[in-house]
Image (cartoon, rainbow, N blue to C red; front, side, top):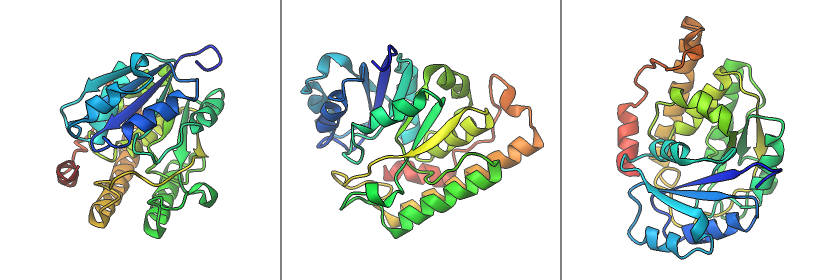
Length: 267
């Protein structure tokens, strides 16, 4: 509970069997989380057993999303969340539980709070945030900031975020991406829907295990290009049809590209 309002936490999981129990315990220990939704996205054998071992077991729900992809998992979690605030993070040990308090503090004034992993002092030793990933994310974020003339952005790939439930239900019908670049789509749509948003620095630590996306340079470059393509397409859409994002449902172009299909296979 945060200032009298309930908080849901979404943890998508695919290859986090060895870290998910610790992540649940750490975030639950903050004392502000009311429910944790673990989205089992065809996760590694033994993941469910690790989830069941946590001290937060009675407040943790495991749901299953058979469609492979980060976006599909997060959208599934959104459908199950009931809190006034919804926080998304990764259970791979890269994010610190105490940062939820920071995000919730900003959520008092903003409808959506996005995390940023590019502040040098908060990048821990061993974190997978080398020169290419850091400046690549920064550059694409600045492209988005420039094209949409929005608030200062420094990281387009950070998956830690907090959104008010009423805002989520407003923008949710516009989501279309099932793959790994769902995060930038959510960010672009929140901009086009004129939500009050901000990006704040969060801790970024060493991952347990290897990411199937950022752990592979070829996949990471492909994902970056997909992000750029998505941002540009949405900008063109909004120019050609300014009223498009005022509709209840969004007749978007098919954003599930062949490259995204390859990304799913790599996941």
